[in-house]
Length: 169
Image (cartoon, rainbow, N blue to C red; front, side, top):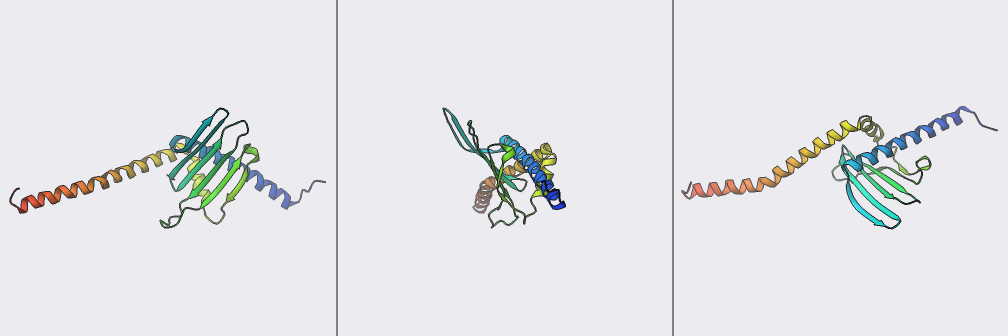
């Protein structure tokens, strides 16, 4: 006999909502990591390909994907969320593994940190999120170049001051 109680219907809705959410997240993460992520490990043999890729600093998140591409499959996604504390290690807010996406297994799903709404906002417009990420990365690269040039500029200024002090300039 089927239980059609309100609590059973509510649980059924929660299960369906969570499954949909996780499927959307896995597609989004795979997409952005494939486009902007860095390959950490890649192994290929006759019947087996293994890959680990990571995208750090994606608008408050770090995404890691791990996959074994064989007929046996097996993939894993880990999402870390930047808590804003520079001294703290970013906590894992979601970790899932699957062979068949419809049968995925949740290893970690953090409820205490408000990361889901932030991620959903990024997922609403992936192109804009990628553009924003690219702009932030360009700005970081510009700051790094400026910081690398600063010691050279300071050395030149000191040399000019020494030359002037000695009546050479």
